[in-house]
Image 1 (cartoon, rainbow, N blue to C red):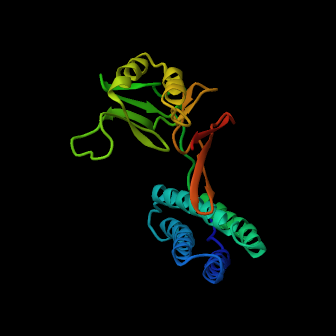
Image 2: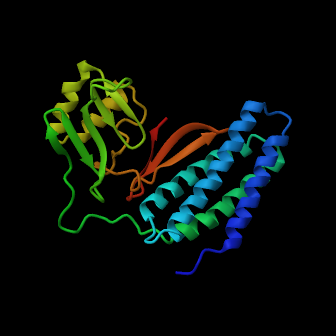
Length: 252
């Protein structure tokens, strides 16, 4: 495969500098906001460059780490775009240029990263993996990687306590009065009841985040095609689109 076009990344660096200059010279932004938004733009550029270096300057290429950095760069790009929308018409023009230029760099690098392998035909992943009476793993129905875990917080945990649900967008601890009901559903592989209980009774936006109610399946971060949305640099929500095309908000 040919080398990425150096001019693409040089142009992306120049655009990043122009974005930083736009933030620094805007009259309505305070110093703290300017510092934070400039930092976001730098992180976007550095993450993209690090993904490139992991693919081109490591032998063999570290495609796993590069994929993670490219995903982080995409998140920073959406964050910076939301910040540019808070500026004047010049910000809108920069946002449009950013989307176009970043997509070009992203596509060049993504072409070098192997697609996430699916489970072999005839050996579908387990729906629910029971580790113990109080520990369960929900594997991705496509690749089999762990998407959600339910287990007791360790003794050193200072924030989350009790039975902790760690999904693809968030982690939270279940109140003791709810734990047995959830464990019973996991034991019977009734994921829809877990999802509806989280969303309707516990008022957790998005319910069981890795779960697609229409498919009745679990998907990992990659196969749910997670996309975070930002509003003036602040996290707003997260959407997921499963391999079957079902789209829903999984975190708000």
